[in-house]
Structure formats: structure tokens, C-alpha cells
Length: 137
Image (cartoon, rainbow, N blue to C red):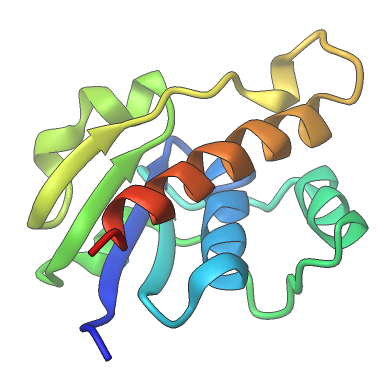
């Protein structure tokens, strides 16, 4: 069995996108990846993010908003910024073998129909591509 890779998803507030990414990666491939999420600051979780995850059968128990400070000094294989604000603070993030930026629209301020489900689908698709690339022999 290969080593488990530690992945940290970061967004401005850790209230929706980064939490969804954490839950999706845990659900999709806990064998190869250990997923975490944080915000530049901790915030209250947007209940629509949890509803969207639960709607597709993803376990949300234990998810909580965390500050980036909680992970200070911890090494990660991948640190992935999910919004403009967090990508601007990439230098503040924990050490990582690879840092990436995946910008996703904030569903809380989107005018799309069912923005949280739309964001969840976009994040889901990107995570599945990430898994496919990073676990390829």
C-alpha cells in the first residue's frame, strides 16, 4: 500500500468550499489521502454547504470550521487554495510538497440557481481529476 498523502484545502473563511472539498476527498479516497480544511480565519459553517453534502450522501459529522493557524508547523503533501483571497495568502500556508490554486466561485454570493449544489459538483469533478492524476502508477 502506498503512503497516505496529506491534503489541506484553504479558503477565506472555511465555511463552505474548503469544507466541501475536505468531505468529498475523504469520501472519495480515504485510502490514499488524508483531507483537512482551513480558512484564513475560522467562521460559522454555512448550513447550505452541509445540506448539499448530505443531499448526495456525504457524511458531515465532525466537520467544523478551522483557522489556518491550527495547522501551523504541520507538513502537507498538497495545499490547495480554493478562492482568490486564500491564493493571495499562499505564502502564509503550511509547508507543502506542492501548492495549487483552484478558484471556485463563492456559492454564498452566487446568483446561479442552486449555487451550493453547483459548487459541490465543480469541486467534486476537480477532486476526482486530482485523485486520478495523483494516484496514477
